[in-house]
Image (tube, rainbow, N blue to C red; front, side):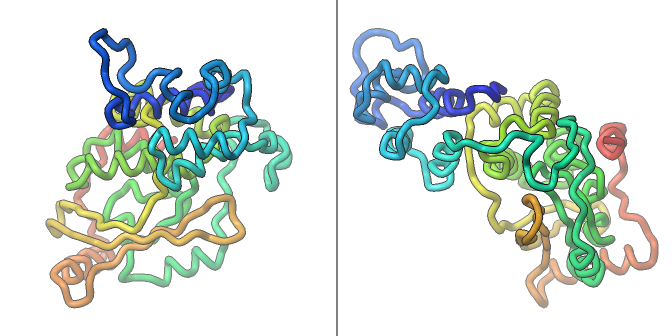
Length: 302
């Protein structure tokens, strides 16, 4: 990941996804050396010079006007979150050492995670029927109640969820919609970090996953940006069978991007009954049989 030219990297990735005919450009008889739009085609459609667009991609001009950015967003067919991300990449931001709440931060990826507010910890512990956990913007789990860890041991403090879902085979067996989940999760990770692409925690995570997961490498390279939305979590749990739970996220005010994730089943449904059974097993101390592989052990040790 080229943290020094995030704008250019984003522009290159997104223009590669636009087919010429989608942009109203007729293909000529010759071979095209790029999978999507050429630089000069993007410039023409956006109403700027080819030389100026080249400077943007090469990082030689990092302060385009809002009008230029909106024109590029239109050419690249960006939706509202992706357009906001594009604009954010051009905004000046404080250095790692000067960010609020990071005094004395050495810049290492291993800095201490932000604490979860005590009131939130009390809240999730008081939900015996609703799985809930807290994660930061990098999907590091910071707190979880027993029913959340009964759904998956990877809903546990110290685990990075996107890493676990991509690398832990038990997660792929658990998640019936693994393909959709990983695609949405990677796009949400980019939305969460925004222009903060040089954060040491993100650099560490992206570096590892780019080496170990071809799927992550391919999807991260697309530069998709989609904030995580409420969704249905489809599981195949080894203790209670197939489950469908509603998943909602709640931003925790006064924190650096901490999110409370809460799951629930439709009242009176078969899913609610199965979730109650899982809760009973958890309360009696019977551990769900979602066995920890070597990979899962490695995740927990991070």
